[in-house]
Every structure is written in structure tokens, then in C-alpha cells.
Image 1 (cartoon, rainbow, N blue to C red):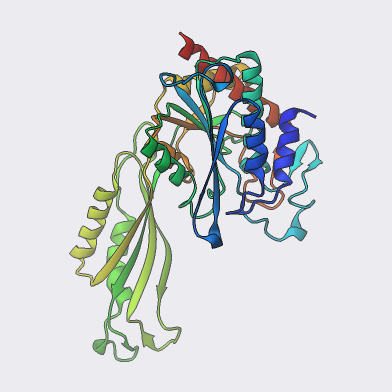
Image 2 (tube, one colour):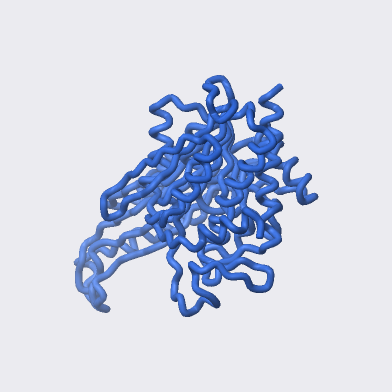
Length: 392
């Protein structure tokens, strides 16, 4: 059994449903300390939802003894928490018992993202075995609050690092980005996410006497029709156009003969770098005002868009994938948000690379055994290339 597979199985066997870490970070920290990493646990959140974060750094030079102050820093980032298993009786094997079937490793977190975490660690071990005095600072940033609210995890660590004046240069997030085979797609950016809750007020009344009431559902309908037809922006070479979607509409008392006094709409923007939260908010409220609505609106910005254009990190990852698999990887900014949105605020180059994502969050989540070693080797090759650049 390969070292990567062995560690991945160990991590999968540790139940770590958000916000629990399940001891995963301690297992990883023990391996890192043996390589000269300084490991720091940063806890955050209330006792009822305590989040465990790990910040580990090894400064350039033998056993991390050099200051590394002028050296570039490469960070591997990820999460040890997983989503709930769902009905365990529907799994072909117990979700926290790593099991092999048909050339696949089954278990909750197999793809999202404990295999990536194992690949991080083993890639670093192999790299340091052949480069004991690297020209790069190496670091890991792990959290147990990525699948949850994401309010006490990576965002807290990034804030702490910024306050300390820590400089990060490159970051690889282990999110499962591939489609059919490890390395066929990487994320070099993500769209921003902004949600809103719109409450439109009316006057409740008897449905048989509409002249004595004001139906807020009727009032908002023309504005809603206009909002669904807007082109918010055209996107660009890296991002698709910004989208606006309504996720929930709540109105009425449940009775069939009562005009509601208000209606509440939940909606979300997924936006490109061509738009900002301010411009989107302004355009939307202008439409609401134009239709004369009596409303209140609460905004939540979940994350800003980020983009890493081709350069040292993207080029190194592309080359590593090509050498290891022969694949010409596709750059993409599609999909949901990730913790990359927080790291991008303090690190200029962030990409996401991990195994295929076809079974993430599903019953019987798995990763193909054939995808595990190539992922570790891609991480190691990327380290070697960036280290060679740093040594010049």
C-alpha cells in the first residue's frame, strides 16, 4: 500500500463532520513536525460549534532553521471536515470505514478532501527527502469549518496571518476540481457570491375584497420578471456572465382566502470580476424603486471573486500535470465557492487542484485508486518546479 493511500485511509477512518476535526489535524501535524514544521492550532467559534484550525510552516533551509524571511512561501490549504453521511444504511460499506471495491476507495471524505490532504503530506515528505534545504518556505493551512458556515475557519487564520504580516506567495487548495481524471481541470479562480433577502410589504386582507388590501406578491411580480431578464454583465475570458437566481419565496398565512401582508424572497448573485457587490446592489435596488415597492433588503456577501492568471503557479501546475499524466489541463472558474476566496485576499496566486468530484457529498463517495498517486506526484512536481525557480 502506498504511503498516500495509507494516510488517506487513516484520515477517512476519523469521523469529522463539520465542525469536528476528529483528530485529523493531529495526525497530519505529527508528520509535519517530523519534517521541521512549526505547528500551531488556532481554535475559534462558540463552544457549541468549536472549530479547529492548523497553521504549520517550515522555513527555507535545513530543518527549517533558516529565517526564510526573503524566501517565497508555498501554502497547501484544505479542510479536514466532511459533510454528514446521510442514511448510513444506503452506503455499500460503513462511511467511516475505508473500503475498496472495483478499484475505488469508498468513504466519506475520500474525494472531498482527505485524499488531497494525504497527497499534500506525502508530496512534501518526498520533496524534502530529495531537497532537504529548499529555497521555498512551505506551509499548510487546514480547517474544520469549510463545509459549515465558514466563519471560524480559514477566514480566521487568514486574518491572523495578515495581522502578523505573514507573506504568502503561492497557494494550492486541494478541492476536488477534476472531472474524469485527476488533473483534467483546475480552478484558477472562483466567482463571487452575494445573497439577499427581500421583504416586500403589502396589506393583509380578505381575498374576496382585494380593494381593501394590497397583495405584495402581485406588486413584486413585475419587478421579478424584469430582474430575471437582466444581463448583469457579459463575463470575460475567464468568467461566465454573472447570474441572479431566486432560491425561495415565502408568502401567505396558509389559508386560501387571505391576501398576505408580506412576501419574502431569497436570492443569490454569482458574479464575475466584471461586477462588484456595490454595482449589483445599486442596479437591483433601482429596479425595485422604479416599481414603487415598499420593501426592506438585507445583503450578505459570501465571498468576492478571485482570479489567478497564467504565471508562475499556474504554469508550474500545468507542467506538473502534463509530465505526470500527459493531460493538457483546462482552466476553469465554474462551480461554487471555496476557501480560496479568503486566501486570495492575502495571497496573489491561488489555484485549486484535486481528484474527480463526481461523487462529492453523495452516498458512496469514492476516489479511484488510480487517481491517488498521480495527484501526490503532481503536487510534488509542482513543489520541485517552484523551488527551482526560487533557487535561481
